Image 1 (cartoon, each protein chain N blue to C red):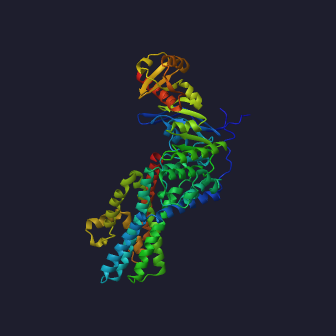
Image 2: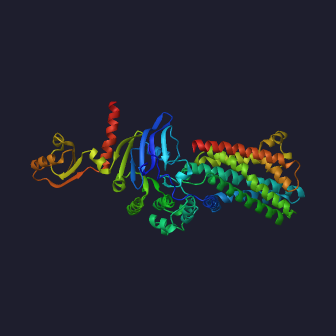
Image 3: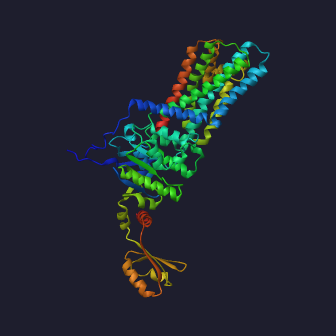
Length: 304
Length: 261
């Protein structure tokens, strides 16, 4: 007997070249039911190509691509996904209700319109023409179009670009609700706090390969880094020579330190300056971890 | 390797009824979308009707009965070409550029629904143009037309738009974005002139007369003329030529679209 598999989509050794450029270099990636995976990486890392393969927009030169156990170009597989692309101009002369109705017709058992409208927060937009909406409103409509088919797997490519903070928070709530219902989500984003807030698993791509894969915490701990900020008149150049201090900078009256052993550095720091005030100690966020990770590969490359 | 057992079973299959519904919904959206876009509809309607009014009716008072009839066929063909060329070419070029086509290919839209929708839209726009021209011919030019003649012209226009759809499509897959209208005009206007839609062929230089059978619009004009009862040649040959043009452009465009997107 086979054990029930929760995989909804997978790339296995996927390779894609565009002329001399290798966009994906033997990429392995699994997506599971009810999981939100954030796909991160600098521009040109292969995120769009990976998504393009899973959506059946691009064909792999080598390796296997499966969507619900099928070729992504098979329409039955795509009937189970929803898509929000980074840039897609929907027909401007159609109303939001008409656009929804059109997309809902592609799916076997779409969500009820009221439910979609409520999830995406577009009740006030239904009768408006798409061209007359603001950028943020258009993004919300695109999100509604992505989820209206009751997909089991949702692709969200930079979903909150152009949204204000309030709209972004609402979208996050909606995404969490979908994940709770068992929908798998692939999220690509430039906003690392977005991945931090939503993702159960983060995959960092660089140069067409997986650089790091794991939970947000695991990714963060790969870069054992803590930031220390305080007001002090100690000399940053001297501090930079201390053991376990990886970086020391002055910004006005404030000092910024990076350390891989903050307890030791703090003890010495408080001794060195009894007048030190407004002390802040924070573990590195995803942003620092991400920068450190992608820089690592750059310097490896330079050495090699 | 464990087979994806649970995930591969679809929760509910798409019924044939819903598939048909998707095709209809796509066609409906495509038609609504263009009928509401004045930038598309106005030139498509105004150019042939204004030309017909000016050259076919106002300036044609003393010319013979056959001239008004001849010009109805000519401007009918002129009017039918533009929804085909521009409706397909401009929108395809734009949608390849602005991400809509990519989104549609990622979404589970049934195969061909996108092209079928545009085709129906072009046929509808062609019907509107021919109907307006027919009304002008009957009311303003007092042309006597039988019902079969009028219906045959309408049918000729609605089907005759299809090879031009294929041509527009071929341009739309070659040119991306803003460049398409210019290229299409470079095809549309000279081809209209060279196939005798503006000035009757017998009045053009002999070389151009000999070249005329190259242009699909010249063949459609012959069909339009015979619809109005002044055809000189057997229609089936022209149908065959138009069909071949349409098929060739369509196959070329589909092949390229599959490969390049």
